[in-house]
Image 1 (spheres, rainbow, N blue to C red):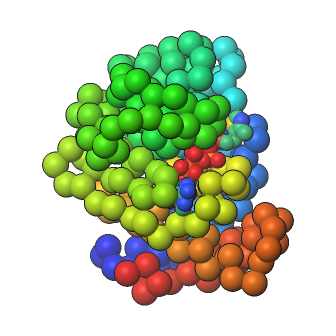
Image 2: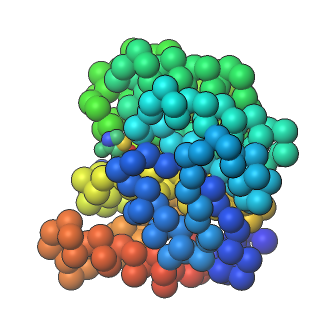
Length: 254
Ligand SMILES: Nc1ncnc2c1ncn2[C@@H]1O[C@H](COP(=O)(O)OP(=O)(O)OP(=O)(O)O)[C@@H](O)[C@H]1O
Ligand SMILES: Cc1ncsc1CCO
Ligand SMILES: [Mg+2]
């Protein structure tokens, strides 16, 4: 089945519910639709349980948090755990402020996440490792990225996808790498948000967490790299990136 996940997503259109940030919500919906998933975004706690029930997988993206949004995050996480739906956390810039740190800490201590997907700065913050984060970007720090990802995975009993020039995917026992990316992905705002929700779509299609994490990275980086051919700036690259996501096949990901 793992060799045919993209085909399966295009056949079944798994409903992928994202509590998105206000910056990249549209980009994430377009990317999900391009790979064949069926996106839905909402921030209303009143419909959280109904949407989780309808969805095949859920992503909580904490990019633009508010006190009001915390009610939504808690309601969605609780419903996902109760209804056994895969749940992905994207802890955007979680080390940047005490407010973000508290929200992520509360979510992770009260709910079980299937996958946490973040850059090195975000995963270091969750793992309690000293790191010089840089807003939404990874920033810089010492230490082995595999050890960092494993520490975060073991702390929260989950699978961690640490993205960057080399993506590290680990559940603490099995670890995989992907290094197919392009620097253009780092400058494109929302590459990580897209990756997190694509991983959710693959989980919704039945992939195990390590496979979904690795294949999600493979999908985004392959499309991202192919999109650099014949494009110079970020604008045309974004269009080509969506085209590449639309056309990508299981064979392209091997
Ligand atoms: N320097 C790089 N070179 C190659 N690929 C990269 C690089 N940085 C990130 N990527 C790729 O970009 C994708 C998104 O990861 P990234 O670490 O940029 O997420 P992020 O920092 O959360 O992004 P955002 O906050 O903009 O959504 C991953 O698939 C990763 O492989
Ligand atoms: C730029 C930005 N600010 C908050 S969320 C976001 C999108 C990247 O996650
Ligand atoms: Mg991010």
